[in-house]
Length: 542
Image (cartoon, rainbow, N blue to C red; front, side, top):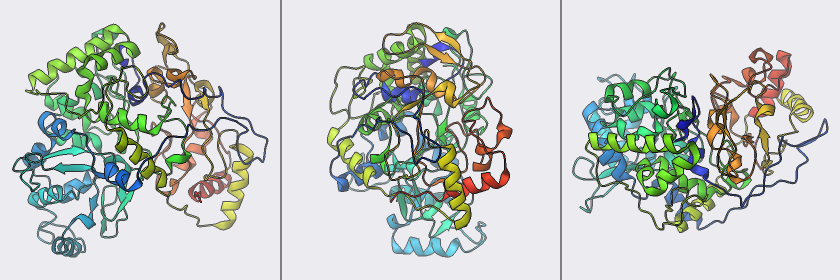
């Protein structure tokens, strides 16, 4: 879809997410806010759209375990659980993939056995339970692997994925970790009590998907080479995939961290390879418009988009899905993605789709239902309430004096766009691409799109603007650019900027990255960068 365009971009979650227009939301300010030196935040009247909320207790269950029927996609199309069995995935391997294990879902005997084994060297001889693929199946059946949701699909009264039960995916897969109170695998997952809303920075989603027997069924979310684009491919890999690419070729793309980085999720079913770093989903009452590019006004619309497109992309084969791709990326590319996907599904024996259990089919092309599909609104609003209620983790302060100096540096340098107080709503304006990314020198990939969509623009060879190329704030009448994040839980964050291009806070603030790079707001002295980093790691939301 988007693909029609050119050579890069990935934007689709946004893509997805936003579809059209949420012109309901107030248009964003053009180039960010303004602030005097030493201020506490931008002087902007823009405010986030207040989304409706439902029952928090229900929302907790929705966030953790709701699939809206996508278990049929992940089991019958992608065949993830079959791949886990065939590959003999052990609990240790699951942790290496960045998966998290909820200890509270396990019986007392299993808890005690795992707790004893993690005190050893984890070799097969010393930790037989954690090196046994049968234990992984037991964890799945107990719904202990966070975000991989097992369902009693055959109504047998028991969950057993080796005898008819199916597994789907929930929001918790990317947005929950544990407290690692039982075990933490450096660079991987952990075992402990759930901490909902926190980004899983170690999830290797590409490698997890490659474990499935039919990762080709995720075709629209892969980096593709389209005839409509002259065979050019947009994304991190040098070449794109096609409908006749083999499972081996698809898995080689997914398991290469240079193409599909750890901690990222490609949320733009546009045929472009642009996985973006997982983000937090706590204190969503403070959030600005949704999607990096600011294209989605309401959280429930964002969630609906996730479930109706990203977690079951077979919905893209519906008339509403095809219309969506054609509108955003052009007729030729949109049709080519859908037709190619149908070819892949047929070639791999997938039938009976789409799978998501829609509660309504409003007219497509709106933010509420980009593809003309909306899942249960009561559950979506309940999840709004739960995510609003989730508290952010406290900041980490190791040097009070450095933190105070960093605060003054922040007030003098950063408050045209960011608040000092993270308990305040994030400024809701969109920062123009040229402001946040001075090196942006885009080509026009698709000049004519229906209002309010702007032309599709993309800077060749750069990932930063890819997500904003096709789906951006123009969907709701705004500009092409990026919106502000909450500056919380930064002590745990391994990479910065949504494309992972800054590898630490020091790197983010270091002029070595260059004046034309994304977010080129630097401090020349190492001591100042250290003070600023100390302040940022210490930020909390009261």
